[in-house]
Image 1 (spheres, each protein chain N blue to C red):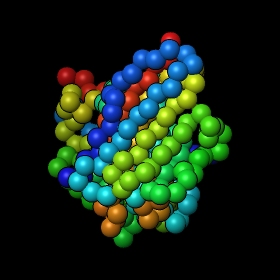
Image 2 (cartoon, rainbow over the protein chains, first blue to last red; image 1 turned 120 degrees about the horizontal axis):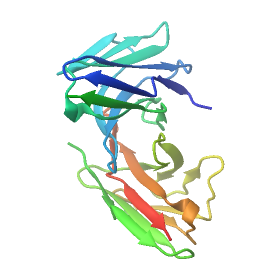
Image 3 (cartoon, rainbow over the protein chains, first blue to last red; image 1 turned 60 degrees about the vertical axis):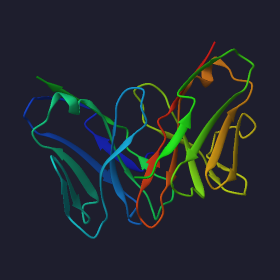
Length: 111
Length: 115
């Protein structure tokens, strides 16, 4: 049973647009929420991560919004570029223990 | 930053043979290594957790005798796929937590094709 539910499965956005991916979790013991970017044939690369003591974290064009009461978190990609076309996974873990991954979202940025 | 070096990046083997995949932590000590497999267009599925100097812990449904994991040192963990069959063809990825709440580092993955 998937502990982290991710949506949408795929999305298409125009260059310069905003991509939004949502994740929800049930286990309130989770204390680390990373987002990974994966290109075909490569391992996942950490994009940005947040811990439950903050509601938002921004790094460049990437922002995580975290809603602890709703048990939801989301990734916003601002000013989307063709190079952002990849699969994005949300995940959650408890104190460096195993990560639970979402199902993934394939993002396609059209030029 | 922390790097986990995974080799080989791809391998083709014949049915019935064994294949070993190595993951090395280059600039930190990985007391724990997670091993995942990923089928096309799917998420990462945790197969097992290895801890240096002790037996690996396998997830439900993963055959221990087929996927042998060894974590003999603080910088090296290996996954051996024994008696490989075409259904074992997949993308295998290792990952190590960096400790001190610094997150996880992933290897670059190994594409295994069994013919």
